[in-house]
Length: 454
Image (cartoon, rainbow, N blue to C red):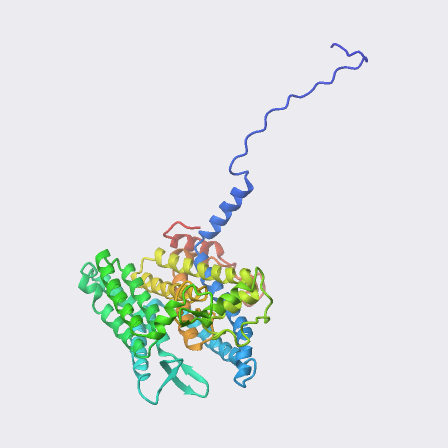
């Protein structure tokens, strides 16, 4: 071996090989994306999104109702927590309704469709009886229950149309009658127009718009042809245009779209402009919970129709985007439930509920942002109002029941193991107890899967 000048053997250097290109599996961003996609495609994703999203919206709504309604309650010589306590009571009752609806079988939901429709029509007609109906802000859509408790039957009309319309279309689909346009329209459209007429007798056009959106959602899910869909939409738009043109109040609300001054073209846009002021003063993270300035009498209906503006002022852009994300997740989960089921009633009912909540949220938030006219509809699960909260939470229970009823979700729920405690009735010593047969349960759950999901 040749030696170096110093007498030491030369150092053998290893040849560096070029590094292998990183594959997609080694990319951390790609791995994170794949994990998120896998978690998003799990069978219980819709169930958790509906349950968690609705509960978060309701809890955050309770907090904002308490913050936004304190000044209004004090101005009415009431305790500062007056509206919060009423909303908390309604949320508690609504939670019971949600739990009951989520545990009811689909057959019982279908059986309740006609009684709920009959009850809603009776109460909506009762509103127009002198001495029974109560007028608030120019709209006679309320019934006094005694004391400060009121009920708005038109809110239950939304739930009635969803359940009854879904049951009607499911029965006709089973008989293969939806290929004929007369069976698709009759009696769905006449009954919907009857509900709309009862609502418009009280002057509540905002609720009528939501009911119309539910009707179009059901027709779209039923596969209505384009010409039929456009025809019904044209008739509804013509009727809506006539109702707007014949009402100075509605024309004034239409003129306030995009207004930046309290007086815009002769129209009083005080509420719309101060809603924009509230959102603009919130910044990124808001002025702090309870620190709103607009709720001190500047912004009308701060705890009902314009509670989103107070949320933007106190919680900032971060708070409003969080509310939007929760509603987006709720809407996605509802669409997913409607798209993955093979039961026509579940598809129509889930699609109707999703259309109802999504359309109402868009109309409310659009009015606060100045992009749509003020329709006077509350933000679902968020604004103050027990009459709106109770049927909405029952509808959320419907979605939860449908999400639990998916084949993949049933299999995943069947595979759950109790983490705490022991099986009931397993007395005696540990040696005498029978072993838990979780493997058998897993085999049954895997055999029950039809979609191949994990």
